[in-house]
Image 1: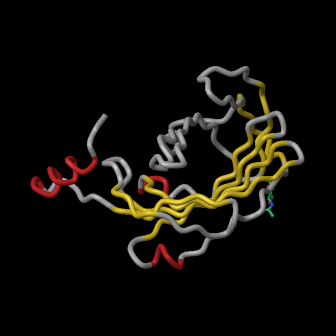
Image 2: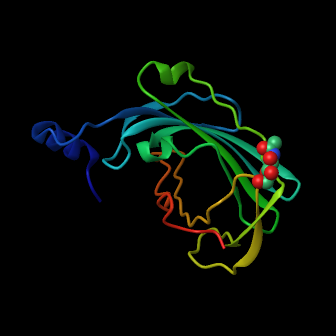
Length: 174
Ligand SMILES: *[C@@H]1O[C@H](CO)[C@@H](O)[C@H](O)[C@H]1NC(C)=O
């Protein structure tokens, strides 16, 4: 377990990087308020993440303020389909300082027109294994993605990590 604060102090001394502090919170509505926390070394920006998870007929919106990696700032909006009627639309806005208080974000509607590409798809919770099915990609979906995430809430720090995105052009849909 690394100590973010110690890392920040070392970074400051060695001038190898900067440590960011972000407001961290979660809500199923369009805004939230939470405590400011020091981000770990891989999370170098504050982010506002709005998403809608669809499971069959059930739509669950979420609004998160968190520490994010600045690589994630350039990836949105995202529309991901996992098969079995499960999809996630998500938009990330990165922000700094006071702008994070007022920044707003929208999630554009998903384009569900098939585009001829396909990916192996599956989703599982509490496990790294799942049974893949081949699903058709829609709209601007051009890449397959493999992703894992951990979310802690309650009295524990909430962070979104680690997303694993393919490098641009480094992964191809079939
Ligand atoms: C939706 O996706 C299809 C397939 O990629 C594309 O031809 C169409 O222009 C898109 N529609 C909109 C409104 O973006």
